[in-house]
Amino acid sequence: MEFVPKMHGSQVKLGSVAIGKTDPFRRALIGLAPLVVGLFIVLLTVYYASSLPLQPWYLNIILAVCVVFEIGNTM
Image: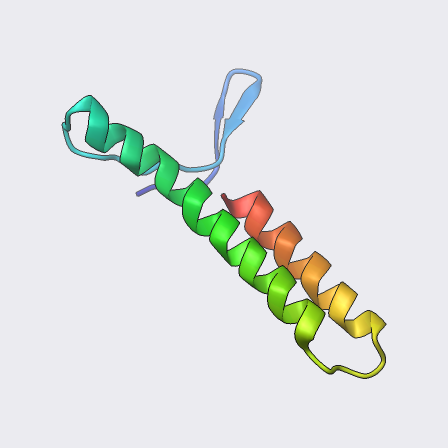
């Protein structure tokens, strides 16, 4: 795992994770896992934010937007 950003010419590599040799099916599962889990978390957040009784009501919207933004950027 690499967490430190590195310059490669005019591009910045923000990090990487090495995976072992796998067949194409498992590699596809590894690639789709962040999308599936992230989408599940986003949908769960929107569901709970719409049902939470926070007062005032706009706190629900702020909470949902912050979580969706953060999860969306890390998927």
